[in-house]
Amino acid sequence: MGAHPGRARGFTLMELVVTLALLGLLAMVAAPLAELTVQRQREQALRLALHDIRDAIDRYKAAADRGDIARRIGDSGYPPNLGVLVEGVIHQRSPKGERLYFLRQLPRDPMAPPSVEAEQSWALRAYSSPPDAPSPGSDVYDVHSRSRGTGINGVPYAQW
Image 1: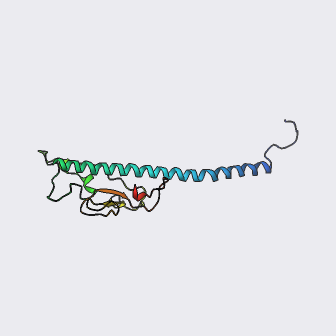
Image 2 (image 1 turned 120 degrees about the vertical axis):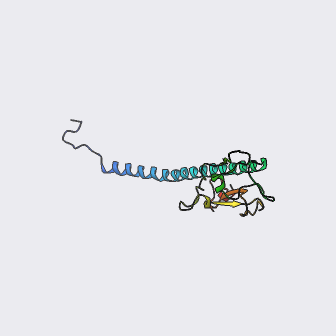
Image 3 (image 1 turned 135 degrees about the vertical axis):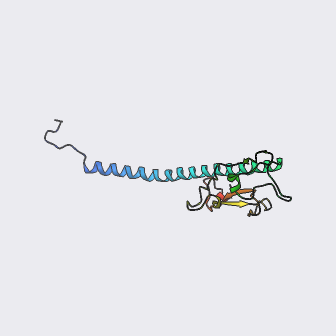
């Protein structure tokens, strides 16, 4: 028995209202932080995907320059499409005709809608297109996001 015998124990209506108001305030603060965290994760995934694809394109070009990949006269030495990086190409110096692979799988653009296939999620730039007006062509010199969004850093995703 407490200091007030016969009195029921529990919370008053005012205590419950104050508690709910504080919980609502915390939820209002937490929601934007959660959205920011999700955006940061997607941007990190975009950075990693771009790095992986660009690295694979550079390794393909280096292999072509070394003569490890068959080239036709006039080819730039860059891959004809992104699928080649995963499917592989025949290693010209291998006596068994082994293949050279540059990616295990092609990453999707994390900013693209989920229904878009990985290869179609990226915008391509051919070697012959200028940097200020990237456009696809007979090879893949670079990739960038098709998203029209802007990153937390203020730079549009298409310019990453």
